Amino acid sequence: MKKYSVTIVGGGSIRNPELLAMLANHKNEFPLKRIVLYDNVPENNELVGKYGEILIREYYPELDEFTYTSDPDVAFTGIDFALCQIRAGLMDMRVQDEHIPMKHGCVGQETCGAGGFAYGLRSVPAIIEIVKMIRERSPEAWILNYSNPAAIVAEATKRVFPDDFRILNICDMPIAIMDRYGELMGCTRNDFEPRYFGLNHFGWFTHVYDKKTGKDLAPEIKEKLKNARFGEGNEEHTMEKSWVETYNFMGKMLEDYPEYLPNTYLKYYLYPRHVVETTDPNHTRADEILEWKAPHIKNMMKEVVELGKIKGTKYDLGDNRSVHASYIVELAMSILNNENRIFLIITKNNGTVPNLDPDMMLEVACRVGSNGVEPLGMEPVSTFYKGMIENQYAYEKLTVDGLMERNKTKLLQALALNRTVNDTDLAKELLEDLIDANEPFWGKYFK
Ligand code: G6P
Ligand code: MN
Image (cartoon, rainbow, N blue to C red; front, side, top):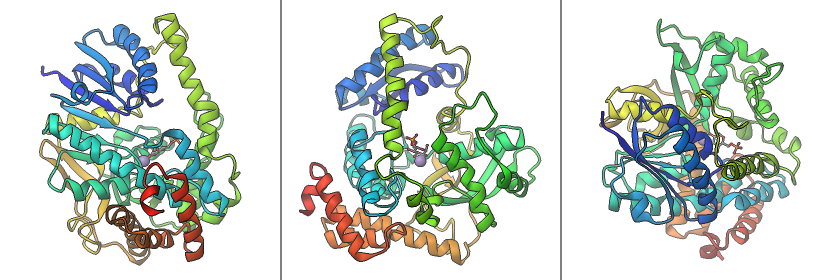
């Protein structure tokens, strides 16, 4: 059986312990010979790297090589897959992205609204550089990119690498939502075959088919979702409170808009007033992560490094197969074995939804195989969705245009179009604040 070489870009991320454990758990389906962590911040990479060395030694002895590096030649030469999940500006800038809009009374969110706009402007140049570094060294590697804000990133990679069918932009939010549907229906997301349309973090499930019978389970899921209270009375649930609220909000959205099952992120666009009123402007999701999740995971890694082992300690991985992150392996397998299974991918519309711009980067159900992705055709979308999506796509396009053309008017137009901003004077004030905070990144071009 062929063995593959994988590089994780953004090696220092606190999400990587789970990712490494998942790869080790799936060694039979997706056999690897080499895993490399790449990061341009050596300190972060080293902590995950030292932890990873122990994990690999104990749980993946079949692997020929595990290493961590900041050297692109080591990281990107002769690889089969790059898993990209970078955070340009790290958590410090995520705090800014979330706090600055809140100061102006707007939604402060990592990927949505003015925060997502500032993050997009940082991410795009970083991703383009990484893809170029990979392509110079591994022209045929599959690049599975889930760096955020994925909608803006995908719009940019489409423009710069138009024919590169081995760049796949994906998001785990619909996966996590289907995990929730599985809880409601007493099965797992792998029992479902979804149909979905929209932009990234801005879309709807139209159907959720039972894979075996073909029956559309969406009506039943909708009923259950309206009364669902996730994360309560279930010991196994370690979901954080803010996520529990976000999942529970799907039921509220369905009461107002019963037609399709909404992505959780629509909350920020359809209920911005509620979001602002219920968020502490000085304590957003980024603060939550910095206070609890990040130190918790970092301390775990430090302790393991000190102990020199994972097995037999309280951090033992057992045979707890991470179902959530395993979608990455499912996707890789579908490519490698040309399985043509269905995944939700962010890809060029090209007539998939006939009444939307053919150039739009849609998130939609696609068959994925060794020749790339093939979207499943859909019906035209009705007025509400068409209006929402076209407005949001114009915002995304103008964000990328503004950056690439160094055109400040287009950046202002982008922000003014964003549903979470809307007012021109507000957009101008926000833009100046975001330019200042992002001076070392894109801000310097717009002073
Ligand atoms: C979901 C989204 C990601 C996003 C993440 C944020 O998984 O699909 O795009 O980055 O949520 O989660 P966090 O726990 O960092 O707030
Ligand atoms: Mn996402």
